[in-house]
Image (cartoon, rainbow, N blue to C red; front, side, top):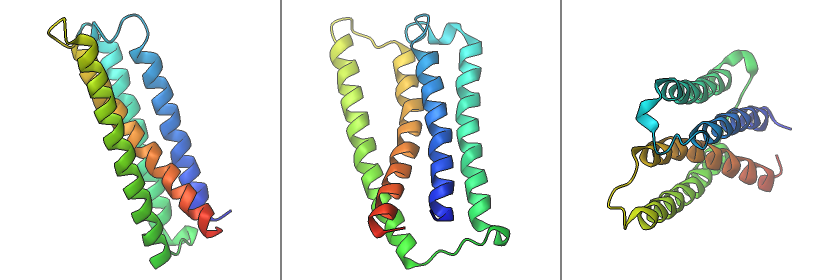
Length: 145
C-alpha cells in the first residue's frame, strides 16, 4: 500500500468520525428544530469541523514534507482530477436531493427550521471530503497502487 493511500485512508477515517459525530449531535434531542437554543452543540459542531480541517492540514504537511518521501507525478494529478469530478457529482446530487426533500417536507408549514440549513451546510463539507477520498482510493486502486 502506497504512502498516498495510507494518508488518504487516515483522512477518510477522520472525516467519517466527524460525520458520525455530527449526525449524532444533529439528530439528538430535537436539535434540528431548536438549533440556536443550544450553544454547546453549536460549539461542538464547529469543533468537529475544525478537527476535520486539522486532518487536512496534517495530511498536507505529511505529503509536502521531504522527511516522508512523497513523490507525485502526472498520474497523481490525473487521479486527483478524476476524484474531484466524482466528488462534484456526489455533492451536487446530495445538495439537490436534501434541499428538495427539506422543502417538500416543510412546504405546507411555510418555513424551514434553521437547524436543517445548518445541517445541510455542515454535512455538505463532510460529504465533500468523504466523496473526494473515496474517489481517490477508487482511482488509485484502479491504477494498481
